[in-house]
Image (cartoon, rainbow, N blue to C red; front, side, top):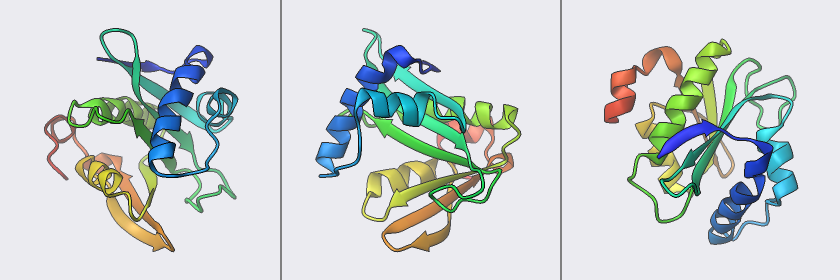
Length: 166
């Protein structure tokens, strides 16, 4: 598996992956290739959108990291990062999420971001556990949503590699 920056040419495959996930959640959220390109790859607040690609060149996950600006839809403190992660169904425990977060963490640090928010549906236990393993801790809740924060200075490379929480 390799992790690289997403490009507009990845929008179709990312859309397929996102559609599978959203259908499993019974979600009506947008997922078209145009939406993926505009909302994740080319969003004006995007710091980095990364894709994980397996040995045959298929995208098996992606992670979006954007800058929280004033008035963002999540109510995240301006200057923080906002992260979203999507990993192909059936690929759990292969290190995809960990590899994606390593790339996002590096991009956040280069952009001067020291805190990242992950706003997670309260019933999405896999995502809650994933973000906990990456060093995120609950800092607030909203109806139906758990908001977790990762303070990057508290997550070392060795902790990220081993999955040890800070």
